[in-house]
Length: 302
Image: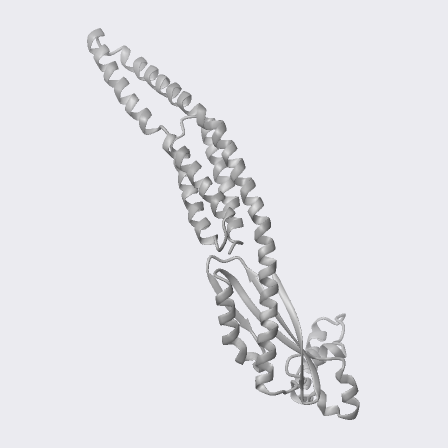
């Protein structure tokens, strides 16, 4: 997302429009970047402090650029130097570069006057007092940051609805599969017992076979306990409740939700590894898909 604000600055008889843009993309941590003209470099510490106080995560970049205002055209008639001097060396270099480019691309259009004048270094910048540039840059940066915060707030509000919808779908999956797990475990236990009995029936005598079958049954019961996923479902529901509580609260929640996504994913992986039926496996995969969807959206939250 991005927010932009323009401010006007007088300098050397020229009106310059200073545009400050604040961009932000997803990031787990706060990463600040600045692309400012030399005249505005002095504003970087103030912009950095401002952003650090308002944001805790995201890759945020401030960009500033200026251009001569059209209102300066009148001044240029009486004072041509007010618009800034032409850098002849830079202009000649640009002309040479254009000729070489057209040798390779003969159908390419020539640069327009406005494009030439906007080329970096062709026109010397309007110089004002350094404090004036810094003040205006900070003011425009503060307004751009404020607009960005409003945009993030609106986006965050929309994301809360999306994430709450996903947690609701995950609860639906849990409520559908959880009651069936004891049946799946019992079926698996019975099937495993039958297979082992068939394998041993031809080799064991009746008495020894009975004792051995009892031991096998005990081992299967212990294994069934190990594959019971009741605790995983309980923790899964607890984590989902924690997600909803965080979304309903106030203040930054991004890092807390990052942690909860890890916990949810751990429980889903355990469900998948303990699965004893195709339906249970599909449910675990579906939960992991929902968790990944939430993880992507959580990166947009402060």
